[in-house]
Picture 1 (spheres, one colour):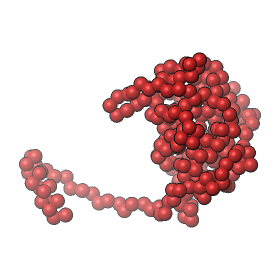
Picture 2 (cartoon, rainbow, N blue to C red; picture 1 turned 120 degrees about the horizontal axis):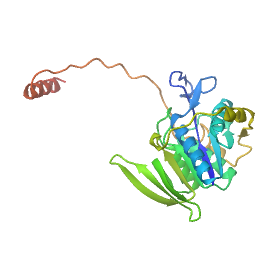
Picture 3 (tube, rainbow, N blue to C red; picture 1 turned 45 degrees about the vertical axis):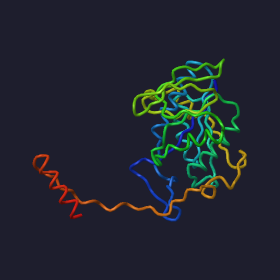
Picture 4 (tube, one colour; picture 1 turned 135 degrees about the vertical axis):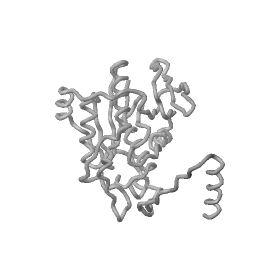
Length: 260
Protein backbone atom coordinates (compact mmCIF):
# COMPACT_ATOMS: atom_id res chain seq x y z
CA UNK A 1 0.00 0.00 0.00
CA UNK A 2 1.38 3.40 -0.97
CA UNK A 3 0.41 6.17 1.44
CA UNK A 4 1.24 9.85 1.01
CA UNK A 5 1.03 12.04 4.11
CA UNK A 6 1.01 15.79 3.53
CA UNK A 7 2.40 17.86 6.38
CA UNK A 8 2.99 21.53 7.01
CA UNK A 9 5.59 23.23 9.16
CA UNK A 10 3.94 26.03 11.14
CA UNK A 11 5.43 28.77 13.31
CA UNK A 12 5.49 28.12 17.01
CA UNK A 13 2.47 30.03 18.35
CA UNK A 14 4.73 32.03 20.67
CA UNK A 15 6.85 33.40 17.82
CA UNK A 16 4.69 34.58 14.92
CA UNK A 17 6.00 37.35 12.66
CA UNK A 18 4.30 39.06 9.72
CA UNK A 19 5.92 40.55 6.62
CA UNK A 20 4.45 44.10 6.53
CA UNK A 21 4.88 44.35 2.75
CA UNK A 22 3.19 41.10 1.70
CA UNK A 23 1.03 40.49 4.81
CA UNK A 24 2.24 36.89 4.85
CA UNK A 25 3.91 34.89 7.62
CA UNK A 26 7.68 35.15 7.87
CA UNK A 27 8.89 31.55 8.07
CA UNK A 28 12.64 31.93 7.53
CA UNK A 29 14.52 32.04 10.82
CA UNK A 30 11.37 31.47 12.89
CA UNK A 31 11.12 28.54 15.29
CA UNK A 32 8.67 26.08 13.76
CA UNK A 33 7.00 22.77 14.50
CA UNK A 34 5.04 20.15 12.58
CA UNK A 35 1.41 21.21 12.42
CA UNK A 36 -0.12 19.36 15.41
CA UNK A 37 -2.97 17.79 13.41
CA UNK A 38 -0.46 16.46 10.88
CA UNK A 39 1.16 14.38 13.63
CA UNK A 40 -2.04 12.29 13.73
CA UNK A 41 -1.89 11.91 9.94
CA UNK A 42 1.71 10.67 10.13
CA UNK A 43 0.84 8.21 12.89
CA UNK A 44 -2.15 6.83 10.99
CA UNK A 45 -0.10 6.36 7.85
CA UNK A 46 2.57 4.45 9.78
CA UNK A 47 -0.04 2.27 11.50
CA UNK A 48 -1.59 1.36 8.16
CA UNK A 49 1.85 0.46 6.77
CA UNK A 50 2.56 -1.73 9.78
CA UNK A 51 -0.79 -3.47 9.35
CA UNK A 52 -1.04 -3.80 5.57
CA UNK A 53 2.54 -3.36 4.36
CA UNK A 54 3.76 -0.85 1.81
CA UNK A 55 5.37 2.56 2.27
CA UNK A 56 4.68 6.01 3.68
CA UNK A 57 5.90 9.06 1.78
CA UNK A 58 5.77 12.40 3.57
CA UNK A 59 5.32 15.49 1.38
CA UNK A 60 5.60 19.14 2.36
CA UNK A 61 5.93 22.56 0.76
CA UNK A 62 8.03 25.23 2.41
CA UNK A 63 11.44 26.86 2.84
CA UNK A 64 14.61 24.77 3.23
CA UNK A 65 14.26 24.74 7.02
CA UNK A 66 11.16 22.53 6.62
CA UNK A 67 13.58 19.63 6.17
CA UNK A 68 13.71 19.42 9.97
CA UNK A 69 10.03 18.52 10.15
CA UNK A 70 10.43 15.97 7.38
CA UNK A 71 13.29 14.33 9.27
CA UNK A 72 11.11 14.19 12.35
CA UNK A 73 8.46 12.38 10.29
CA UNK A 74 11.13 9.93 9.09
CA UNK A 75 12.23 9.32 12.67
CA UNK A 76 8.68 8.30 13.51
CA UNK A 77 8.62 5.64 10.79
CA UNK A 78 7.93 7.25 7.41
CA UNK A 79 9.95 5.76 4.54
CA UNK A 80 10.59 8.76 2.27
CA UNK A 81 10.36 12.54 2.51
CA UNK A 82 9.96 15.10 -0.26
CA UNK A 83 10.08 18.89 0.05
CA UNK A 84 8.67 21.27 -2.55
CA UNK A 85 10.79 24.36 -2.08
CA UNK A 86 11.67 27.51 -3.99
CA UNK A 87 10.99 31.22 -3.98
CA UNK A 88 8.32 30.75 -6.65
CA UNK A 89 6.18 28.82 -4.12
CA UNK A 90 6.35 31.54 -1.43
CA UNK A 91 3.24 33.46 -0.34
CA UNK A 92 0.82 30.78 -1.55
CA UNK A 93 -2.78 30.76 -0.32
CA UNK A 94 -4.75 27.54 0.15
CA UNK A 95 -5.66 27.16 -3.52
CA UNK A 96 -2.12 27.72 -4.75
CA UNK A 97 -0.76 25.40 -2.05
CA UNK A 98 -3.26 22.68 -2.96
CA UNK A 99 -2.36 22.94 -6.64
CA UNK A 100 1.38 22.76 -5.96
CA UNK A 101 1.11 19.78 -3.60
CA UNK A 102 -1.15 18.01 -6.10
CA UNK A 103 1.41 18.44 -8.86
CA UNK A 104 4.04 17.02 -6.51
CA UNK A 105 1.79 14.02 -5.85
CA UNK A 106 1.33 13.49 -9.59
CA UNK A 107 5.11 13.31 -9.95
CA UNK A 108 5.30 10.73 -7.14
CA UNK A 109 2.94 8.56 -9.16
CA UNK A 110 0.58 5.75 -8.22
CA UNK A 111 -0.74 5.87 -4.65
CA UNK A 112 -3.57 4.33 -2.68
CA UNK A 113 -4.26 6.90 0.01
CA UNK A 114 -3.48 10.52 0.90
CA UNK A 115 -3.76 11.57 4.56
CA UNK A 116 -3.74 15.14 5.86
CA UNK A 117 -4.42 16.75 9.21
CA UNK A 118 -7.86 18.34 9.34
CA UNK A 119 -6.43 21.87 9.35
CA UNK A 120 -3.27 23.90 9.95
CA UNK A 121 -2.66 25.73 13.20
CA UNK A 122 -1.56 28.94 11.46
CA UNK A 123 -4.42 29.32 8.97
CA UNK A 124 -7.24 27.21 10.45
CA UNK A 125 -9.01 27.10 7.07
CA UNK A 126 -9.28 23.29 6.65
CA UNK A 127 -9.27 23.93 2.88
CA UNK A 128 -6.03 22.43 1.55
CA UNK A 129 -7.01 18.75 1.88
CA UNK A 130 -10.39 19.10 0.13
CA UNK A 131 -8.92 21.36 -2.56
CA UNK A 132 -6.20 18.81 -3.26
CA UNK A 133 -8.82 16.12 -3.82
CA UNK A 134 -10.45 18.37 -6.43
CA UNK A 135 -7.11 19.02 -8.15
CA UNK A 136 -6.44 15.25 -8.24
CA UNK A 137 -10.05 14.34 -9.08
CA UNK A 138 -10.32 11.74 -6.30
CA UNK A 139 -12.88 11.21 -3.49
CA UNK A 140 -12.36 12.89 -0.14
CA UNK A 141 -13.60 12.25 3.39
CA UNK A 142 -12.98 14.90 6.03
CA UNK A 143 -12.86 14.78 9.85
CA UNK A 144 -12.05 11.07 9.94
CA UNK A 145 -11.87 9.71 13.49
CA UNK A 146 -11.36 6.02 12.64
CA UNK A 147 -10.51 3.85 9.64
CA UNK A 148 -12.90 0.93 9.90
CA UNK A 149 -11.75 -1.15 6.94
CA UNK A 150 -9.48 -1.07 3.88
CA UNK A 151 -9.92 -3.64 1.13
CA UNK A 152 -7.09 -3.33 -1.35
CA UNK A 153 -8.43 -6.09 -3.60
CA UNK A 154 -11.76 -4.32 -4.02
CA UNK A 155 -10.08 -0.88 -3.85
CA UNK A 156 -12.39 0.52 -1.20
CA UNK A 157 -12.17 2.09 2.25
CA UNK A 158 -14.70 2.54 5.05
CA UNK A 159 -14.17 5.20 7.70
CA UNK A 160 -15.88 6.83 10.64
CA UNK A 161 -16.41 10.55 10.06
CA UNK A 162 -16.94 12.76 13.09
CA UNK A 163 -19.97 15.05 13.06
CA UNK A 164 -21.68 17.37 15.53
CA UNK A 165 -24.40 14.78 16.19
CA UNK A 166 -22.09 11.77 16.50
CA UNK A 167 -20.44 10.06 13.54
CA UNK A 168 -21.13 8.80 10.04
CA UNK A 169 -19.88 5.61 8.40
CA UNK A 170 -18.73 6.41 4.87
CA UNK A 171 -17.36 4.09 2.22
CA UNK A 172 -15.61 5.18 -0.97
CA UNK A 173 -13.24 3.86 -3.59
CA UNK A 174 -9.46 4.06 -3.54
CA UNK A 175 -7.43 6.12 -4.15
CA UNK A 176 -8.92 8.79 -1.94
CA UNK A 177 -7.93 11.61 0.40
CA UNK A 178 -8.65 11.71 4.14
CA UNK A 179 -8.32 14.55 6.62
CA UNK A 180 -8.05 13.25 10.17
CA UNK A 181 -8.91 14.55 13.64
CA UNK A 182 -7.01 13.98 16.88
CA UNK A 183 -9.46 11.30 18.03
CA UNK A 184 -8.07 8.88 15.42
CA UNK A 185 -4.94 7.84 17.36
CA UNK A 186 -2.19 8.76 19.80
CA UNK A 187 1.04 9.80 18.01
CA UNK A 188 4.15 7.87 19.00
CA UNK A 189 7.52 9.23 20.05
CA UNK A 190 10.54 8.66 17.80
CA UNK A 191 12.88 5.82 18.70
CA UNK A 192 16.66 6.21 18.91
CA UNK A 193 17.01 3.97 15.86
CA UNK A 194 14.48 6.13 14.01
CA UNK A 195 16.35 9.30 14.90
CA UNK A 196 19.62 7.87 13.63
CA UNK A 197 18.03 6.73 10.39
CA UNK A 198 16.34 10.10 9.86
CA UNK A 199 19.59 11.97 10.47
CA UNK A 200 21.27 10.12 7.60
CA UNK A 201 18.26 10.00 5.27
CA UNK A 202 18.19 11.92 1.99
CA UNK A 203 15.42 14.48 1.65
CA UNK A 204 14.42 14.95 -1.96
CA UNK A 205 13.92 18.64 -2.76
CA UNK A 206 11.84 19.54 -5.82
CA UNK A 207 11.57 23.01 -7.35
CA UNK A 208 9.59 24.28 -10.32
CA UNK A 209 12.21 22.60 -12.51
CA UNK A 210 11.30 19.19 -11.13
CA UNK A 211 7.48 19.21 -11.20
CA UNK A 212 5.07 20.20 -13.93
CA UNK A 213 3.43 23.43 -12.74
CA UNK A 214 1.75 26.42 -14.34
CA UNK A 215 3.72 29.33 -12.85
CA UNK A 216 0.58 31.47 -12.94
CA UNK A 217 -0.99 29.11 -10.38
CA UNK A 218 1.77 28.96 -7.77
CA UNK A 219 3.04 31.21 -5.01
CA UNK A 220 1.78 34.71 -4.35
CA UNK A 221 1.15 35.32 -8.05
CA UNK A 222 -1.15 32.32 -8.29
CA UNK A 223 -3.10 33.10 -5.12
CA UNK A 224 -6.58 34.58 -5.70
CA UNK A 225 -6.88 35.26 -1.96
CA UNK A 226 -5.05 38.44 -0.98
CA UNK A 227 -4.59 39.73 2.58
CA UNK A 228 -5.15 43.49 2.37
CA UNK A 229 -4.44 44.40 5.98
CA UNK A 230 -3.47 42.71 9.23
CA UNK A 231 -4.25 44.36 12.54
CA UNK A 232 -5.05 43.54 16.16
CA UNK A 233 -8.66 44.26 17.18
CA UNK A 234 -9.18 46.94 19.79
CA UNK A 235 -9.29 45.63 23.34
CA UNK A 236 -12.83 45.38 24.64
CA UNK A 237 -13.78 46.93 27.93
CA UNK A 238 -15.20 44.76 30.67
CA UNK A 239 -18.95 44.20 30.64
CA UNK A 240 -21.53 44.46 33.41
CA UNK A 241 -22.84 41.50 35.39
CA UNK A 242 -26.56 41.93 36.00
CA UNK A 243 -27.86 40.91 39.42
CA UNK A 244 -31.36 39.95 40.56
CA UNK A 245 -34.03 37.46 39.63
CA UNK A 246 -34.89 36.61 36.03
CA UNK A 247 -37.52 39.35 35.68
CA UNK A 248 -35.24 42.05 37.09
CA UNK A 249 -32.33 41.00 34.89
CA UNK A 250 -34.58 41.01 31.81
CA UNK A 251 -35.86 44.52 32.59
CA UNK A 252 -32.33 45.86 33.15
CA UNK A 253 -31.12 44.24 29.92
CA UNK A 254 -33.95 45.81 27.92
CA UNK A 255 -33.06 49.26 29.31
CA UNK A 256 -29.37 48.77 28.46
CA UNK A 257 -30.24 47.69 24.91
CA UNK A 258 -32.56 50.70 24.47
CA UNK A 259 -29.79 53.04 25.60
CA UNK A 260 -27.28 51.41 23.28
